[in-house]
Length: 424
Image 1 (tube, helix red, strand yellow):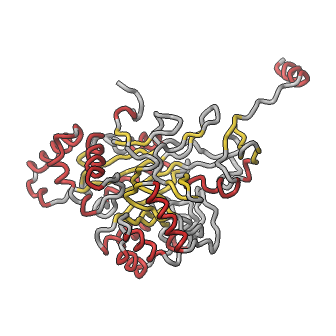
Image 2: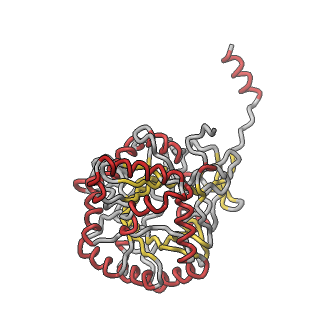
C-alpha cells in the first residue's frame, strides 16, 4: 500500500494534450484594475488588442488545438471595450466562453449583456493579496467569502451560468483553505468549482541563474520576482493534507503530471457529490474517465466546464453510474441509506462540485523546469501556442528562460585556514 498523501497511480490522468485540450487561454488586454501579489502578467494601460487581432488568435486556436472552452483572461477582460462582442464571437464558433476576472468591474448591466451574448461561465479570482479597495481592503480569505457570495448570487439570478472561483495560496493564507472549501459546500447549489493555485515567484534564495539563450538575466529584472525570502514551494499535496485535517474523506480523482516529473500532481481534481448539509462522497477515477471519454466520443473534444443544470443532476449520476466506479458505489450506498432514514430526502437535490489544486512551475535540482503536462492555460503568441504563465519571458527576452544551478564558488586557502582557526 502506498504511503503517499496521494498516489498518482490511483488517479485518472486527464487526457488533455497540447493539440486536444478542454481549455484554451485568450488575453484580449493586459490592462487590469487591481494589483494581485502573485500575478504573472505586467499591467499595461490601454493595451487592448484590436478585435481583428483577437479573432485571428481564435483562428489559430481552431487550427492548432481542439478546445471545449476559451478562458477570456488578461489583465482583466471586463476592461476590454469589446468584451460583449468577443463573448458572442466565441459562442458563434461553437466554443464555451468563460470570463476570467477579478469581478471588480462587473455590473448587473454588463452581466446581462454578457448573458445575452452567450457567456457560459465566470471564474472569479478573489483572494486577500489583490489590493482590493474600499470595504474589501485588508479582509481575510474567510471574510472575502461575502464578496464571493455576492458574485455567485449575481450569476444565479440569471440562471445556468457556471460559477467558479480562483485563489492564490500563500504561506500566510493556507490555513484558510479548509474554511473556503466548507464555504463552497455551504453554497454547492450556486458555486460549481473552487480552484486553489500555489504561489510561485523567483526569490533571492533560489540556487539558480537565469539565462535567455546564452546570456545571463539578472533574477531581479524578471517580472515575477520578490525581493525578499518567501515560501514558493507549496505543493498540491500540501493542500490535500490540510483539507483532510477537516474533511478526512477528501479524495482527489484525476490529475495532470509535470513535464519533468511524472509523479507531480500539477492539476489535482476532486469531484464531490452532496448537499449543503452533507457530502455523500468523492467520485473515483473511473467516473472521471467515463465522463471525459463519453463527452469526447460525442463532442470530439474533452469536457472542461459543465453547465449548472448538469451539475444539479447529482442524484441521477449517483444512481445511474454506480456500476462503473467503486467510489460511486459508496456514494450510492450512503445516499440510499439516508433515504431509508428519511424518505423526504428524495425531494432534495444532489449537486456535483469540483475542487481543484494547481501546482505551477517546479524547479528540479539540476535546473530543469517542470511545467504542467497538457497545460489547459495555453495561449497564442506570434501564431504559436505558448504557456500563458510565462508570456512575459517571451515579450521581454524573446525566449523562455532557462535555469542553471549556481556554481559553488571555490574556497581559497586563506578562507579554509580562517575556517579551521574559527573552529578551533
